[in-house]
Length: 302
Image 1 (cartoon, rainbow, N blue to C red):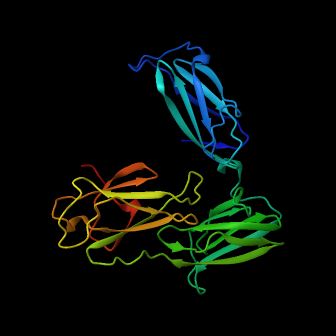
Image 2 (cartoon, helix red, strand yellow):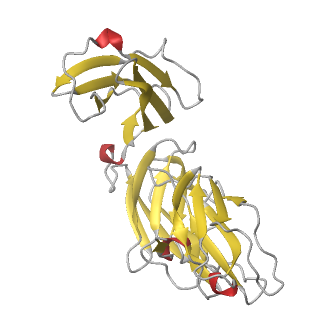
Image 3 (cartoon, rainbow, N blue to C red):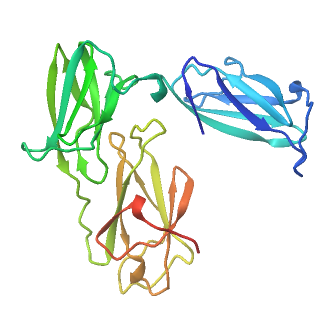
């Protein structure tokens, strides 16, 4: 998936072949049909122009200028070579990380300190992102140092701050307010992260976080199902017979599910499949422990 910026031409390329690996050159551009959808899932093929070009050696190019932030979808069809279409998705932002300087260049020195709740220990290596109040423009970012501090330069004004140290601390609620008026110092507090306690010794809490390509938290659906066969004896425990779905939180992307440990089943190597927004991740064995970060699960190849 490519990243783009609103108002800036977004180039891409696709290959035309005969399905046997033979590249097709010289295809009249008028034979291609292009359909484009904006982030509202509205087809804008007639209002947002898409330019086609031949790049050579069977490669062809597309070019359009996205005018909205969000995910765009482009499909190119050819009636002979790929009537089913070739699709590409694009995540478009008002600003990309390459456009900004982590140090920022405002008029005032702003000192952000992150510590545990109740004037507790300082929190180093915490990711800090400073946005406008609409969370559309990123003004500064970085990580706290060993003293739990991040120092940046910002102009007077109101900002929103996102804090994240996955599997270590939580900073509810997010985003945090930041008001800059001259030299500013502010303290944000968070709690040590701890997943929920499993309801029985035979279960495990699987947890994780989801974020988009710009590293902002997003809410997605995580679907978990037992790999066939789906019914096993578990000594009287309730068994998943249908897929279960949980949505990650919009503000921090956090999610968790209580699952029966694989070893509890009488069948060998019982696996769970995970899908995120209908994208199959892999199959996993749930370990014999009270909780596990999804990122630490070992992919299992049947």
